[in-house]
Length: 246
Image (cartoon, rainbow, N blue to C red; front, side, top):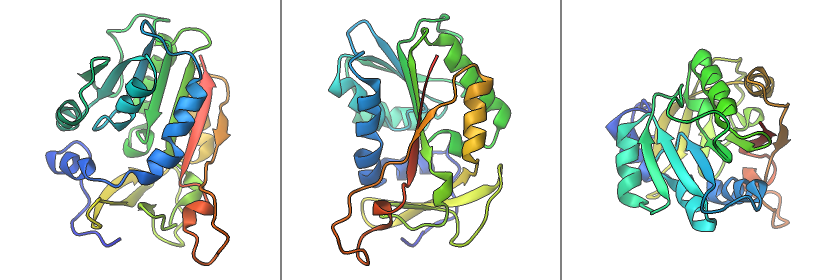
């Protein structure tokens, strides 16, 4: 993947347009099925799931299509939401702009599940993420699942089929800015900015908000037996999925 532009800030129209055209095959194979499996059989027409940082709506559409969830899909980017509403409308999805920190319109203990995919890595502000995590804990019903999927901090520098976050051989510390390449469907790439955090820091966001320490899944794709030709995602997980409950 060779980027053809300078890094894009997430909350911009060019970033939203490029993100619309990203190659999401790895996320579809490694994140989406795991989210649905871990949410289990809790779906129902009166059950609300939050898709926090929904972007262009790919996860929200999968949640609405695979079960009977009522989905509130939230994002701080109006441009991302415009694309989500145009590309992935659904009668059980409500797209909503929010500030990335508060869920003030939701009552305590009123939400049946929450997912947050590839969001924490895009936000440089630890205080904002801590506030958001606390808000998620507040609005979830006791025992409701919270699934946090993000880039695997142990996979920086590896070139996967559709992404690479970080430079090969580089060592990153919590808070470091990391250039991330995302493959687009036409074979080109966009360069975006993410922010490195260790697995311990992710755990701390959750436990400091009142969640139990999460289980950690590192999904990979099956290899075809020819190790030299197998892509990196058959050996190392590009993503991690943290599961906890309120």
